Image (cartoon, rainbow, N blue to C red; front, side, top):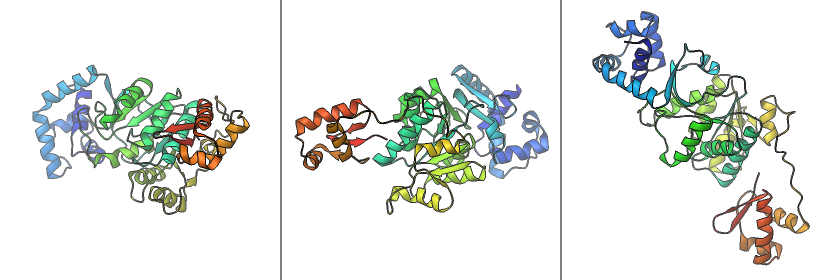
Amino acid sequence: MEERELWYWLLSLETIGPAAIKRMLEQCGAPEAIFHTEALPLRAKQAEELRESRRNFASLQREYEAMEAGGIRMVLLTDTEYPSRLKSIYGRPYGIFVKGMLPPEHLPAAAVVGARRCSHYGRETAQAIGRELAWRGIPVISGMALGIDGFSQRSALEAGGSSYAVLGCGADICYPSSHRELYALLARRGGILSEYTPGKMAAPYRFPMRNRIISGLADLVIVVEAREKSGSLITADQALEQGREVMAVPGRMGDSLSLGCNQLIRQGAEIMTSLEDVFLALGMAEETSEKGKSMPALSPEEAEIYASLEMTPKHLEELSQETGWSISALLMYLLQLELKGCIRQEGGNQYSRRL
């Protein structure tokens, strides 16, 4: 039995997490000794799973070989490439499974998290944050979930940056399945990380556990939208326990998607009022974006129409009534504004400003 195969065996155990592994290592010293020791500091259910896994060790060896052949590698706490940010967190994983790359050690990193069912404003904000972080070379850490997570990560990748997803399942599983394209992009231009061995399916209890790794890999955690009881708030709490800075995007009073962020601000989180707040928190406020963020020159007609738009989508007919412009004229100027990157078209003849 090879040492790394024994580590894979330990990390594959469903009921045995970092705390139990730590107790066994303190008693036995190494995975091989754990494999051959009967009296271990475990609960009955844990001890039964461990005994059963010893009998099935040959199948785990085959799993380990298949993992490596499939392009996923196991990075142990004792390996030189293990992320230094994770070494200091409580409950640090003894190993992580990586498809693609790990976040670079020499760059600051920001985590962007939020509601799965986010608002239009939340999506725009997440995309703007991901895009600006990418332009300044800052990796985006998140969970590849629907909503804020996915929007921020896709935006970062589309802007030429890098992003890293921490999953609540094996690194070989795309969850949610609708994010297959994003999963493939992350694997090529960033990385997919998990503390769970390949083949482990997503389960509700795994996501709060993985959140400590999302915050642990980041220097700053940005919460864009969150309900009063949200997994994003768990990530924020863990970030504070780990000594990371937490920033929240404020929302409208009474808006259910804003309750979590407003609560964080009330409890002392930094408030995000502009994208520059993010770079101030990362110690990069003096730098400017490669792309520049000044408003492009607008004609008087374009400026008038732009002024009538908001972050929330507005229907073409409503714009016509407000501005007095005909539908045909509006469509011409709206197309020009869209080409200049000032606005975006939503479905059903709806238009909104871009951040």
